[in-house]
Length: 383
Image 1: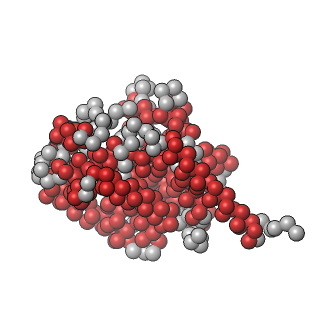
Image 2 (image 1 turned 120 degrees about the vertical axis):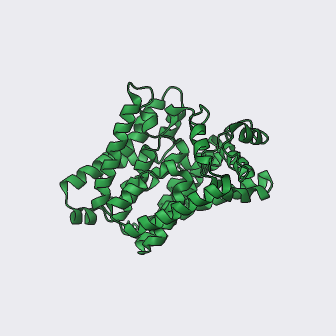
Image 3 (image 1 turned 180 degrees about the vertical axis):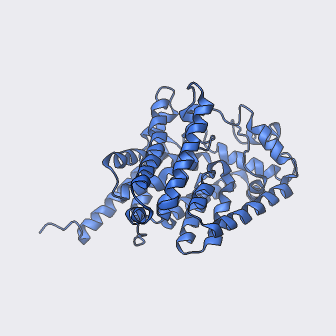
């Protein structure tokens, strides 16, 4: 007798297929990404920032550039808060190579923790998607920290599901490590009227800003703003998976970017006011990436909650096909090329815009209670 689709033999085959996908995905990116000339360039930036933390030279481009070039042939300006650099100083008590291993392990653990904290239905499917995620592979190879941002967001959602709202707000405030990606989070919280979360987030942000002034002195906001205007701070705008990259090279690009950003945040507000927590949080991460103005391919790991929610829900076939495409490397590799970057922009940014538009239209057509039950997703068993 042939095994039933829901029988133990079918479940075992499914697990073997997912294991095969994990192994092939990791193998592919070990070959394609880890040999990049930009490998470790961002970790090198963080390590150098840890060295300069507390010396009032954190945003002195020649100073940090000199430290970075001692370990790498490329240098990147440091654009995080001084409080974060103070934490990164712990890495500098280790030798550079050992610190790199610790940093890689920390970010890998954050990605795995995200897979288990976010309320997905199929954990092994999420792990397979992570293994085939080009943004995840790039952030690990370059030593980026978007995985930590994603972990804090997932931990906050996990706490919210357990009604620990103030703690969720404090944890969510830690997303200030990449504050430009967190612009949409307050919109999401205000729309859902989660006042205790807002209070916790406010307390956390005040503490982080206070620590930043303690680490770097009163002049750091002006110095960071001045550094952000230099050409080295935001190179290759065409490669950015956000509205800034999408509008790059178009007439009236700044006006168009601001108009689209306002529209995305307005759509997010309408969605968050009526949708389920999980959906609203996924929409907030996608909208935050869109309006960030400064982001690169590795930051597109923030699309994973939206992509995987689409694949697990009763969504339109076009959205499901689009989400499946973003589970592979092709759109992101296109974004990195000289010839196909515009197509990569349309696929990556187009998905986020279509996701917000589809949810927004659903909000328009349905009232709050119906939308909540329509979009609610059970956490599912831990697998």
